[in-house]
Length: 114
Image 1 (tube, helix red, strand yellow):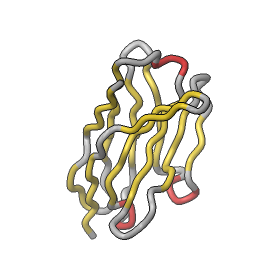
Image 2 (cartoon, rainbow, N blue to C red; image 1 turned 135 degrees about the vertical axis):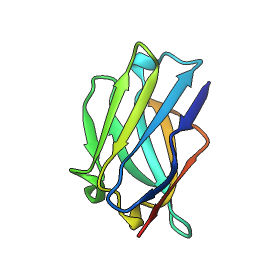
Image 3 (cartoon, rainbow, N blue to C red; image 1 turned 180 degrees about the vertical axis):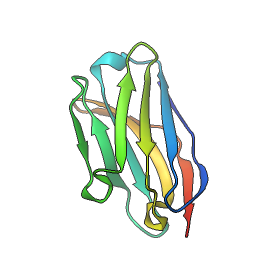
Image 4 (spheres, rainbow, N blue to C red; image 1 turned 90 degrees about the horizontal axis):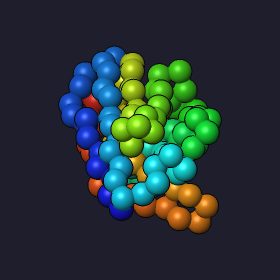
């Protein structure tokens, strides 16, 4: 099983980035996909999650600015991030989960300058 995150980078406050997570080696259509982030010196936290049925939930801090989606044909889960703020700076990780099983990809760094 492999999750490959991409799309991170440096952006100015108010800008946008789109992260993508490409999955391989698992039955993608049945797993829930999530994006988490970990800022320096802080714990990893949930950003957004989408179930196998397409139900989404978001952290309060990103509601209205971020949008998670999935493409089961391409085995990808994307995170569209708009109106970025300096406090969104973190390493972003994608996660795949099914019942008690969970796996993580390597993170991608997002830096938002003020």
